[in-house]
Image 1 (cartoon, chains in turn blue, red):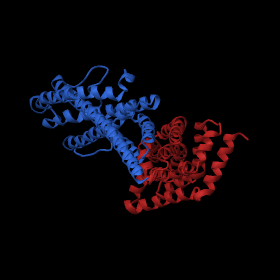
Image 2 (cartoon, rainbow over the protein chains, first blue to last red):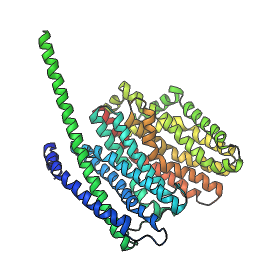
Image 3 (tube, rainbow over the protein chains, first blue to last red):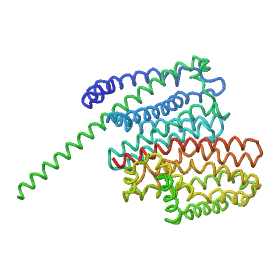
Image 4 (cartoon, helix red, strand yellow):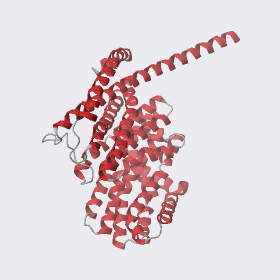
Length: 250
Length: 222
């Protein structure tokens, strides 16, 4: 399946077919999820209306982490099998994942002020999310600094895999350290402890954000693929022009 | 003599002699430590409470500051190709080189930490625990900085990039080394646990980082 898709032509055809579906599904899910989450779901008995930030904050946090896991897997696939599309996927994922992580931090600060009384607390979960953002930034900076595209891909893959060590630290930080941030309430062995009236809109919003993430990655992968092809064509044209100029001179 | 031992001795001599050896990072460490009280203010209770964190942080910065030259020159002048052709396991070569560098360059750091701890108002025992924590964290800090240095070797202004890459990976070492000093200062009884965790992270880096360094350098030479 991976090697079937490793053909850029085939991938391009598939992506072109999938992207309109991805956008439609994203819009539909947001159309259902946003009013449900922001207007129709009941306010919290403790936090009243401020709890609604959760419907953006929690999906953004999950997807920031999931995107990094995806970056790590894509990097591993590229590092072992040298499939260029895996590298393309890694390149496409990084900025999108960084934006979701930043969104999680910003919405967290906005939520923290009314509930904890502080914009920012140096607790384990918050700090490790900030470290995740730094990992994304370091990955992008390294790729941007290395001019040789193949070397950038290899070095980036190695760095992304090293950063994977941080993921379990973030996931379990609230269980290992008894800190201000609340422990996991959705993905638990004994079932979610969050009330169904909030769990449902949260699930719809999480799906909507997931579709948004997937669609954005597909679009970026196609853009990178087309940019690469355009550059190759440009180089070929320059070579042709040079050859013509040489012949005219000789 | 075992080729790896010979390499270790050579790298050690080079790091000791070339470019000031341990003096550069030690001076950087001292400068950071003497500027911090000027920024924070001289109030003893604040300075003492902040001391383990500031001292561990200054040590971390000094590893970042010196890691640029760990692989940069060898990548530029072809020494790395020779190491790769030498028939020794390249991962072991990277390990020997990084450890020699760490030992030659960072040996003053625990001494500085112990002295600085006393100067910041920590008790002698707490200062020694902090110094021990940093001594245990030093191989890990150096290996992770070396990993970032190998990835960024040959890049213009590699120093900035190294700091951005290595800092997130060095976080656990910073937390546990400073945590040991803080636990000894507050006498919470968890200093030993923090020391063991710092050593554990260093050992994990000892296993994983050389493979990463070797992979990063090989990608460059292919």
